[in-house]
Length: 255
Ligand code: DGL
Image 1: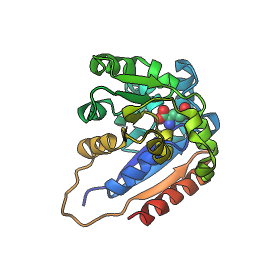
Image 2: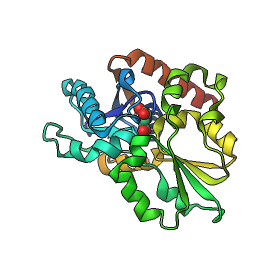
Image 3: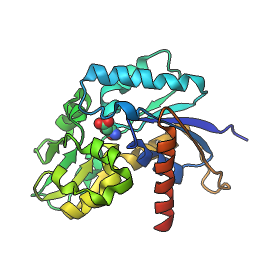
Image 4: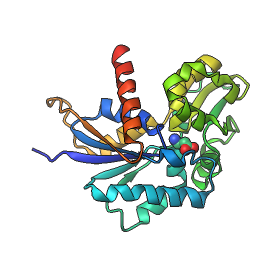
């Protein structure tokens, strides 16, 4: 029997739990380790150097574990750090990232005349990596970018009472063909964003799950289902575990 893979998932806070949930529901036989730097979030309003330094310090907690891969469940950390982390000889495992789902949104345009809204943190939108993506794909200027400054921290703070916040105050005005959630925190309020704009929402989660499956896991389609395990580490491990438990219960209710 093949040895179980251990995959570490990292985000600045609770945003990456949305990717952990999709990995948990769509992959199998994996030991997940979830690590977040909740105390230092939001990363998205910091400068590149600080994001990189904070990420490096946070990732030190992983050195106590034997891991097969690291997933950056944070668009901001991916945009700023993924290349430098891959060059770091101390990190001897494959590193996966997440990116705004620009291509899926463009490939599924329904109303050519309307723009596509890309919501992401300031650091993500300013990064060379995302600027390059926009240069490549936003040829006719259809994609409009917006970085709601307080949104990720408001979601982190209010995760246990999302329905008590008027999320529309953080969202730009306008009608869009679709909205790309380019920050994993924003996925927690996906249904509010959908209600606000009355349009389709895209995020990078499923693309990342498929990428991990293809590159790392040799999964047999008809084999017996092998359960995943999840371990939460870091200063706010219990808080993240509680939110994740709520998320799984909510998705079981909707089955
Ligand atoms: N969850 C992070 C992302 O996907 C950003 C949150 C933050 O600003 O810390 O970009």
